[in-house]
Amino acid sequence: MPFILTVGEKKFYADDLTLAEARVCETEIGESWVLANPLRSAKWASSLLTRFHAREIGEDAAKELVDALTTRAALKLVDYAEDDDRPIEHQDAIPVVDPKAATAGSETTPS
Image (cartoon, rainbow, N blue to C red; front, side, top):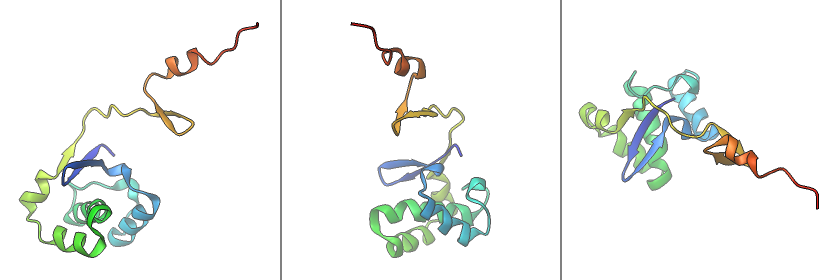
């Protein structure tokens, strides 16, 4: 999901949702979270923006804030990332930027 949502000074990818947040979105929208597209409908835009705003200001305040957004304002908060340059490989839960470099020093040499 290469959508980036701006919340205050922070940017979130749509797939930065926790599973708990994804379940809330699924309940609100009636679709799987893997179909999340904030440009496809006001429901998806509202649900995703509310989830990320709620992290900062709480659920009730986030819902009130997002519900008051105009469609023009909401569109300015959503970007589509054509090139997703985030690491896709992880080692011990840490993103590996260059997978070859991560394994290069892991070999041991005899003493």
